[in-house]
Length: 368
Image 1 (cartoon, rainbow, N blue to C red):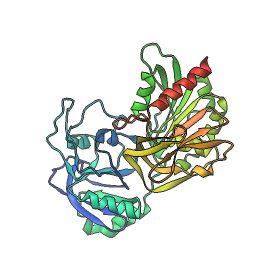
Image 2: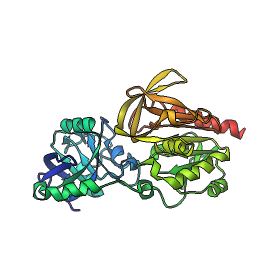
Image 3: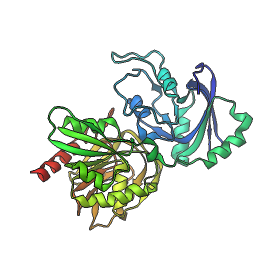
Image 4: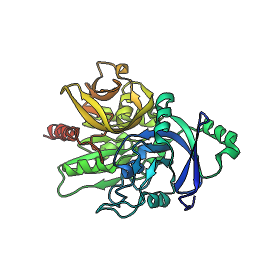
């Protein structure tokens, strides 16, 4: 990939043969991915650096992206994991006191191919009606080799997603005099999960996805956090089998997004792929115990099948107010609870940050 002129034509080819012609920004070339959309109005830099988007071409439904620029502080990981990026219009003159660059420069630096000046409303409608589908963004003339590209699209599948985003070594983070030690499984974790724990007096030991039960025993944490991450949860068979043993350690567990799905699978539940997923910062979720509806930030294409869990093992604690899908689980035979949404939302609503406090309270009771 290389830096290109932003006036150059670029194309999106979908698996159903639909072609969108627009203009290019970011890097040059051809990239394939699963085309999804997110409804976030802000937080585009966090979206671009969220490992959960690994292997996906992300479409922003909000029509203007980049108006407050980018900076060196809002990244959720060390780099961008999206395959491609689509917007209706990008702002080349951002204005914000924290701004240190624009989104075009960011994409070029990250070698991400971008497409703008297409009808993102039409694209979103196609995905909503037909479901997520594979696609290709290219700065070459798509019509000259459309059949060849369609064959590539047909054969594309996201595999080994967690293996491609997890860290390769243990890292420790803390501030001041931490009261608790938390082992944070890195399935593609967002930095703000780590920061929410640090802010609450935790020493956070970030461990690779394949960390064994014995290694967790050696760390001797007060709690275990299972992070978000990309891909089909059911393909992570080694992690799932590992979590079956970790659940027997009698250590408080809190899971978010992919972590929620993996612990459910480890306890005999099933997962399913949603038609077009939940991605954005305005998803309504009902906390069944509190009887309240919260606005949440979400980013997932799979969900736990709520009635597939043995009621003697766990129960659904949260449901999505739009489609009734499972948004949380509480377990009865181990000290664990998980949610599908992001209580650490950054940027996004902080309505459900109370779940971090509940995790801290759970560790406090065990420690005392």
